Image (cartoon, rainbow, N blue to C red; front, side, top):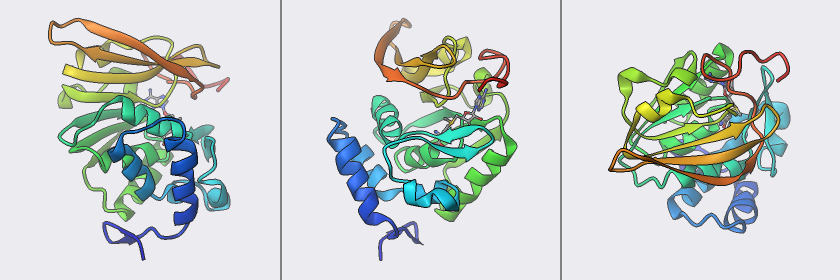
Length: 227
Ligand code: SAM
């Protein structure tokens, strides 16, 4: 029996291993800690029971409330882009199912995650508790403002598409910290990484094209009518 913090995660272990080999390693993700986390965290627990047989497929999936659990490769890529070592405090925007949160929680000291939809936040909390991932604080609210009381963060990961880079994220980033977020229109975005350098300047890199649900809030999109 395969266990994670006492929880039996052996169900779907073959599908999970295949997912990691074919979707993550074969596409060039070589961060061994990220690979191990993706092998361990039981993605099927974060989707609706009727979709569990698709949990390890190469795609995003609906989680209700017009939202999605991100594609495994995107979760791995965004996590790897933060270059995590284990000591970090990370801000995540868009808890969604809590899957990305769980991957981060297994790799860093503490995760602060903000979700605007109450039902999703409470469901995510339940699964994280079930897996005894206790180093996660989830807050309900508008994540475009960041989490000032807990700043600065070693990394900020935004799992929803933004029209541009909300200034609060830059302000709340530690020196040497990294921000990873999708920026673009409501349909398509480019995944961007911003690094706060020691001289106070921000270095920006474009990582890949992507498609996320919109980041809705004061410094994001106005509403989710067309989402
Ligand atoms: N990474 C998540 C997972 O693994 O399930 C998927 C995140 S989903 C693609 C994007 C999430 O961002 C949705 O749950 C949505 O409600 C949330 N969201 C959108 N705008 C937000 C905001 N301003 N603050 C917090 N959450 C927001």
